Amino acid sequence: MKGSDVVIKGISKFFGDFRALNNVSLEIKKGEFFSLLGPSGCGKTTLLRIIAGFENPDNGELTLDGNDVLSVPPNRRQTNTVFQNYSLFPHLTVFENVAFSLRLKRASSAEVKSKVFEYLHLVQLVDHAHKKPNQLSGGQKQRVAIARALINEPRVLLLDEPLSALDAKLRQHMLIELDTIHDKIGITFIYVTHDQQEALSVSDRLAVMNQGDILQIGTPQEIYESPASDFVARFIGETNLFDAKVISVEKLNRQWDEYMVELDIPELGRIKVTTVDNVKPDQRVSFTIRPEKIVITTDKPATKREDINLFNGIVDEPIYSGFQTKFYVKTQDKTLIRVIKQHANYSDDGPAIRWKDTVYLSWSADDGYIVEVKN
Image (cartoon, rainbow, N blue to C red; front, side, top):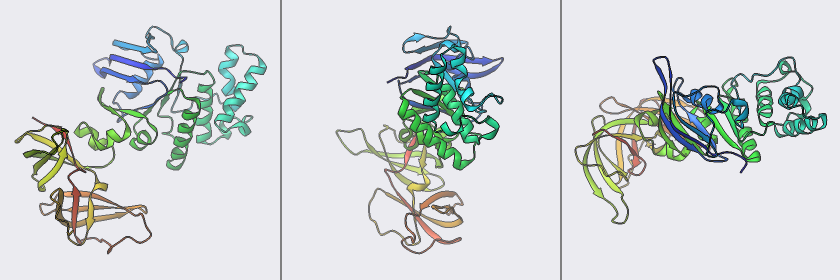
């Protein structure tokens, strides 16, 4: 691997009375594509700027491959940053923008030409080498910025909301290109974004941040399927989240710590959920079920399985989106539950579900999740 391990220990940062980072610690592995994800103002860009050397923390440690770099200036850290606004020189061609740092190092003309075209080929811009930035599309400008950052051969590439200025289709295309570039060069990528889909799509692991704290670190699947808090459950994708009380707990397997828990949810009633958390009767918890995990039908399911949760309601609003339909279903106590039905085939099985239809909602105990234990 060409990248560096990045270790952050107990880093805090204040701007006046505002706490931007609160005792943040995390380890990023060599060659990882790691994302810092969170809403605006959560501290992710501040943390990136500290790694780059543009900000100094009030306390804490930062090491690259075990070496303390907090006293090392940005130009000697073996990191490079790709900014949201590209920061290209408007009077220079694509070639000269990418060559700029090599010119500063007084590299030979032959080396400049060889390396610039190597990285322009990597970002598929060889045919645009002679153009100025104002002759390029947003995606092309971003690729120039990436090539310019990579030509210094950093061990860590820092990307600060690099796709936020692009439209949705181009953003998706650039994500694939970024992932491909990462796979080809093998260095450590640290990617800052507020877009959950971006982070889930390309990250090996990610950290979810809010108000200067890291709330959860894990793989995209771990973060999505097993959120550590109510905030993470709400922020990552869509979900149905309820406060609940534990009624009973039954151990399912003597060898494994897995339990069948019965919950009482005021808006729904009694439901069952499997968990590896050893919760106890009368505890207050949060329960979540993702919309795509819920099966919606107009006929009552015939299953007699005890681990299936079943409720009925009325379709309050169906929203067709081509590849899926999202239903807002109102239960008897007027609670709205979101359900997503994917359209895998041209014609779905069974009758169409329309506005005001009475429907049945069902899901397995394995598909729900206890997010937080409140007491």
